[in-house]
View 1 (tube, rainbow, N blue to C red):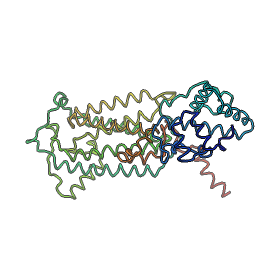
View 2: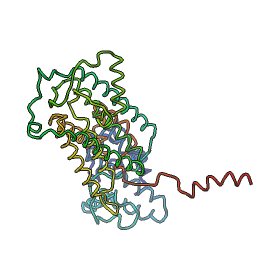
View 3: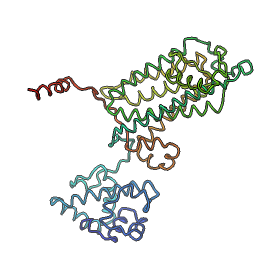
View 4: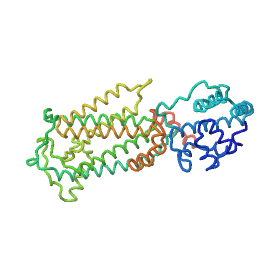
Length: 423
């Protein structure tokens, strides 16, 4: 058999038939006149997109594996030591019995794990093992400018959230007319005055741990982009839910009076106070009306998920105890919010569910390139930030750590250079 670069359209049709792709012979060889040279240049994207646009995912994957195998074999043809071996193989493929055809089929399905050009490559020694899960990304570009855009997005959302919190405070229902709603947890858990501050202490501790992880993580800018994208999106949704429905205060101890910020400048001043204090009672910020859903629960839940996702789960630096600690802190933080009677139970439940599901949905898409490609149009409509921020990542971001600061030798060498020049 000659080099695949010299194949005609008829030979390509025969090759497709040999590999059980007879249904595409007319599409490839009649409609688009694909010969050997063109076949060797096809990529998986070419198979997915017009004008070929194959609709069966399994056929796309198997055909691309066969083309990839053929490309590897053609590279071997260029070397003298494998020329005769490949020529003999292709001669057999055109005149072989059904048994040898089955061997060729198995060989093509095994092309991802082989392709070295040895004799064993042409024997059906093992079958193709399907992808058993997401793989580490091969393209990890820091793209600091995207991280800065993500920061501006989260910054803007927090500012809008602070303003909405002022607006909903003015709309808080009168406690005399609208008493607290029945709640199965709040009605059975006694009010604990210090519990809300304890929840915020937990949030500060988890934030400190996450900041340390970011400093030493090798791909810190990718992680920051994901933090800004996810937390900004959740808080934007929180703004909408707060504006749509105003719930009565969950406990009589909350002294909330509406219509406190009627003037636009008073609203702006209060917005800056909430924003600068990060909405925390530890910094002297007390708000009312922002009950659907709990922002404190969102923060501690996302911090827990990010810490457990981006610290090692196995190996020498297994962070099992750290993960257990963050999960316990997450659960205690939620309990303290309820014990402080600062939110209804449904607020806390919805906050935990939305933040955790969005985190998992984001990372399932980011870690599986095939899912990213399959729902491209729908994802761009419903989750445009993901498509933008993750355009250069095609797999799992590995948990690799580095020392971010210059070494002592580097500092000494930096200060020695001028003295050497002056001498």
